[in-house]
Length: 112
Image (cartoon, one colour):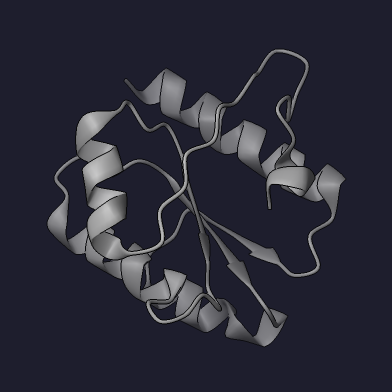
């Protein structure tokens, strides 16, 4: 995912990555740092990104935008259930991924 996003998903944006492998780690990062976007792997094990996305939406008053990477386009209904802001299908296309990430980051900045 890092390679598809890159450190500059658009000319006017630069990103810094932090990693989490569980829901608790995601919450800790969101509570500790100013997280502008969460990108989750829908196929991750043992806790999948779909479940984490839904929990974040349900439990956080101010949840950052969420992009979910899924294995099959047919799984978009799961992403809709999780209430994510954007869905990306594996294998990730760097152009589409960068444009999606940039749009989510710009939307975050304008809504605050």
